[in-house]
Length: 126
Image (cartoon, rainbow, N blue to C red; front, side, top):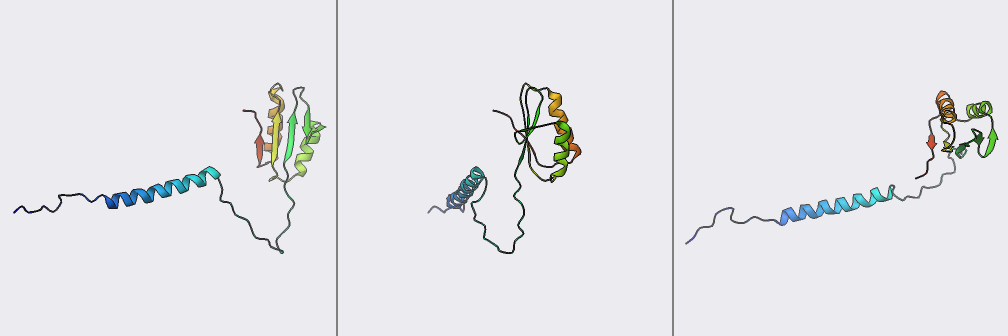
């Protein structure tokens, strides 16, 4: 009679179970990363603070070196005074023509930095 050794066979079923659980976790995480956010609908509250919707402020620099604030031409001095009046948390979107002098771009960036604006986007083309 042949005696059986204790570890003649390896049971791979627990390993397969663990791998399947890991696979489910990876697939679930990948779908959340792809969408970026979880879709939720926030409830309504009647006593919430009604804050003004922060719309973004667009600053344009043309190739001639002219400044525009929300598509209205403005001097650099008036632009600085208007930016002083705005909240520091308001979003500022800066668009500069690629043919514009770089100094105009640096001037606007210097004003925004001096006024400590926190939300700045620089728009480029792919």
